[in-house]
Image (cartoon, rainbow, N blue to C red):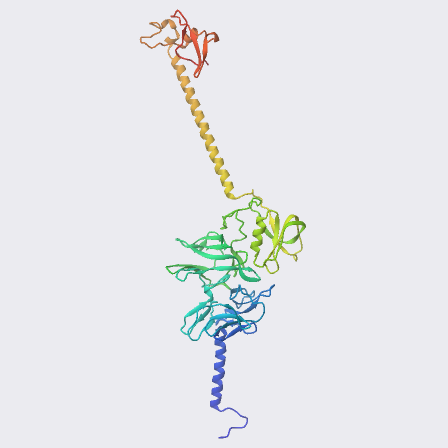
Length: 506
């Protein structure tokens, strides 16, 4: 049968053509968020986009460096802050990197046909695909829908809603955040954010180079002790935290249904940033080791550093001769490492680092800092505090010692007063006994040779005065522990008699 002029398609051919076009179109749309075995994502290819358009996964290069990475970011984030990086410690130095799934189902990064990094390590069954979903999770699954690997199990410096922070007790896995080395280098930095469970609930803990640096305080009713920006009464409260604890897992997750670009970022300076509001949740500044009332861990503070000494970012320069410190181009040093070096160097006055945020430049010695125009280099300058030097525990020790000495002095004073009062009372009692009866004042009234109806010799005070000639020195025999001893002559005796009782003459 002859065809019509112009080569127009018959109805059957048109239907076949339309079906093929529709299949190709739907394949492209379905593949926008998924990569399969043999598929490639590289510098020149279109990135993956989650089905709802929330997240993008692609190739990127950080400014001030030649380092390139594969990572995920919010599609609508104008700053394109990366929420996950596939190869933070294995950057690409050119544009030859490829993200792919090999024939065994391993997700990897290659360059020039050579494997740079195996991202996953489990071999899948049959067809294997990796899909970026609308939560920002990049999931590798085989044809049985078994999850071989997912990015949420391997966080970098950012926590997204639905991500876990804590421990998988069964698998022995720890979900934690690790800061970048700097804003321009995604390599692992100095800080790690972990969730530390307790019997009550748990707390956020930041470690610096493996040592406890800061803690949030316990989570109670959606509030942390040392996160002032985070509490139910704050205008920043827009996250709902859930704590899960069972025999298999202990972790927290958060959701933020009404926030734009919700995420926590552990920045290179060890601060938790609420990216939706660009504000720090904690700590607010470097932890210097001399106070713990803001969650910072106490540490040994150099004797040359005073309470409230700190570093402030300023634009300017130093003049004079620097006798120590200098320049260290070590690319593994972060800004916090420079801060620690300067803090422990008693002659250090300020520090900064290279344009890519690594290495250290330190100013020490007899230098003078001068403010300059806003275009000059930012320097972290040492600012002396107004409070006395030393740690708070020294102040408490001094207070305790002072109170103890005061109590000891008061106790001794009271004891001596009581003893003196008691002695004076005994003396007054003795004097009263000697002068209490008028009959004792007249020796002529004493019967029976100085005895008054019994064998006890009784002498009145007047008798003693008369007998000793008013306690004259001529009658003094000596000095004893209880006072002077006198001899005397009683009126009814013929010779001088040694008084048998000593009497202290007043």
